[in-house]
Each structure stands twice: as structure tokens, then as C-alpha cells.
Length: 140
Image (cartoon, rainbow, N blue to C red; front, side):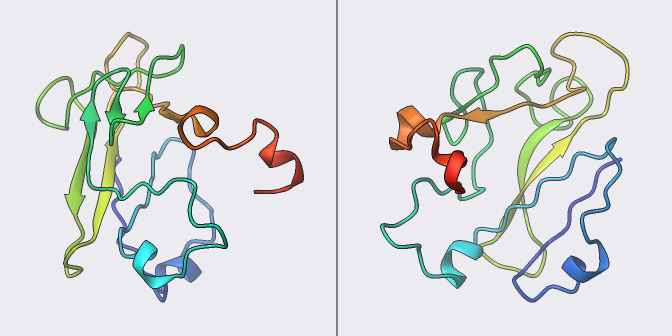
């Protein structure tokens, strides 16, 4: 099952689905317009993913600062329709010029390697942005 939900700060979708999603559905919402609607926090953003790239390199995924070299990820690095069933790509949000969403399709339910059955992407805030390792101890 694939779900793409365009979300804006005033979207009724937030009230309709208060975080009750089945675990079998991979859902990631990214709207590039959010960064333009809200003022940056004091000191600025440590990192901002614009949701406009989906590079499939194992060591330089999405915008080049993410990786999926870990024991959990099974992304083959392709977009849906170009490799194994499923994959990751960026799609435009209908009716919202300039906004895009990261589409993640986990189409496989059987075990295997690099078959797009599970995605686990990571971004190292400590080395990339200099965020201390314990920043979550006091709240982000």
C-alpha cells in the first residue's frame, strides 16, 4: 500500500489522521513549503531536507548527506518502476507548485536483500552539522 498525502500547515488531513497509521504502511511527509512558512529557530536550522532529491547511493542517499548502509535497510537504490518492485523517489505535490514529497514504496513482504521491503535511512547530525551526541537528552 502506498500513501502520498500533501500536507500544508492548515491541512484538514492532520485532524483526520491523528498518528494512527498501520505499521505496514511506510509514510513520509515532506513539504518544502514548510521551511518558507515558519521562521527559522534562534541560531537557524542545523539541517533542512528540502524533499527535492532521492539519490540512491548507499553512502550518499537522498540529498547526498544520508546513508542506508545498515543491517535494516533493504532499498536497492532505485525509484519505483525502475528496479525491484518499490523504491524511493521525489514526486510533485499536486496543486502546490514548488512543493514535493518523498515517495517510499515498500512493495515486498518476503525476506531478501536489496529488494525494497524495508527502508532505514540515516543522517548523521553530529558530524554533518556539529550537533552534540547528547542533544536529545535535554530535548531537541
